[in-house]
Amino acid sequence: MRARRCAERAPRRRNRGRLGGVRIGGGAHLTYCTNVHPGERWSDVRDNLAQRVSAVRAEMCPDRPFGTGLWLSSHAVADLQDAHARAELVELLDRHGLYVFTLNGFPYGAFHGRAIKERVYQPDWRQDARREYSDALATLLAQLLPEGVDGSISTLPGAFRPAIRSRDDEQAMADQLLAHAAHLHALHERTGKRIALALEPEPCCYIETTAEAIAFFERWLRSERAVAHLADLAGVPTADAAAIVERHLGVCLDACHAAVEFEDPAEIASALRGAAIPIAKIQLSSGLRIGRMDAAARAALRPYLDEVYLHQVVERRGAQLTRHLDLAEALAAPAGAGAEGEWRIHFHVPVFLERMRAFDSTQAFLRELLVLQRAQRLSAHLEVETYTWDVLPDEARSDSLTHAIARELRFCLGELGVTEIGR
Image 1 (tube, one colour):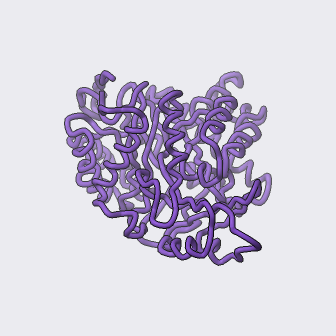
Image 2 (spheres, one colour):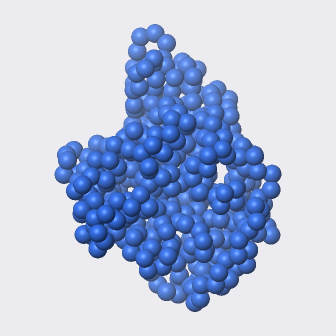
């Protein structure tokens, strides 16, 4: 496809010439998420961009700009409130041929090297801190977006499910999300930059599945009460408030999460289209799949136990789904009578791996999703998200991180039928 020319946006950034990068038809962008690289402060992000992201760009499109899926913790966002730090970020992106079109606003704080487990969901969408962090991310993204490119920010699906105990909790989440939508609307009015917040369904969270996402939108974000409240927040007529929700609130479809929930890609796409809920971002990811759990598979899973991340498990026997909060909990549960069912595990593994030594990945789901993307353009933003490299067993990480990320991107390009990138 033909690259488009970036307009000058003085004084914030220079004209960076042709915007090519990893683009895949219909104006869509492909990247990987930088939450794979440790670092919570702006100085860490600066080093990651200059050294690690630029190394991936050198493998993928050395003569064209490379789109970046940036993770910024709350500490990095605070650092970037300084005008000099923001100017340094813009200059760094320009110098290394990078542009930002999506942010990961899910992990608020530390994400590597220490136990986070369910703390990754804090603060949740009941709390001012989550909205304020998301507002700050959006304000920064509006300054970074190239002309003619929309932005997205993925975020947690409301809250960790056990934390939500009442309608008041649900109402609090909805009110914070509507307030953030009003902020996104104000940014759009002021800058012309259109940014969507993308709620990311995940096992054992308040919103686990596509059906629950649709139900939440209908009950809490599109109700008569919600639309009237948003109209007041945004200072627009009630008739215009519903359009703000559709323009600025959507979902992030994480392929690993949906596969673990035994969802079907075509049914997801059809349901969201029917509900008029945009897929603001697709995270391209694979989990673990054990077609029939037995003693050998249990033993083979032990290297995948770690103390850092939650690895939710969904087991299917017939039509019944049983959920376990973490892999250790699932392995400790009694096997039950007869043969165990199929297990799917929220443990992100390289998307190019169809099979490990003793079991499969959920790559088949991802392949189906990419076929749909190729045919229907489900989303303009595609982001590979394999953040678990530092806790993967050796069998799943035999290459350098730079080469492995490039290999993941090339796998996705191949499934999308793209032979040249940035055209």
